[in-house]
Length: 156
Image 1 (cartoon, one colour):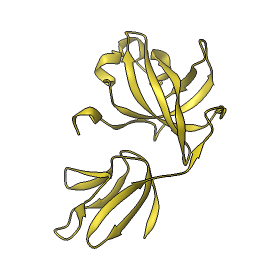
Image 2 (cartoon, rainbow, N blue to C red; image 1 turned 90 degrees about the horizontal axis):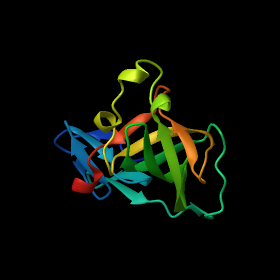
Image 3 (cartoon, rainbow, N blue to C red; image 1 turned 45 degrees about the vertical axis):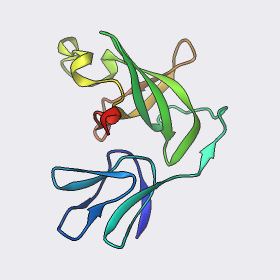
Image 4 (cartoon, rainbow, N blue to C red; image 1 turned 135 degrees about the vertical axis):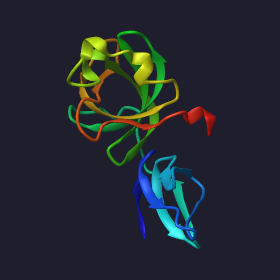
């Protein structure tokens, strides 16, 4: 069995036989991908091997593309990220992105505290809204299936 996994994706349940291997972690009895790449189960280990597929750093993202990014900086109105993957492709070089407060969710935006939702190093799944200012893509996490995929990345 082999598939493509993104960070934070549920891969299997620890059942006494299956164990987390390279590129995975266990949380609350489940095995999740900690990196982007091909995953497989072999010899009772679930592993993720980093994908070799890359694109040129001149790749242009398009509105509607789903990306995986890492939080680099948090302010009261926005979060800056490095875009690491687009769809099923790992980028050779990260692109800068911005998630504005109004693009985090659809309701209660005025009550949202960015530092309570995001933390540095966190992996986030987002959708490209537009090419923003200062050569940065504007991103949104306001749709179902988008948002935080892995917390506390720097601790693992």
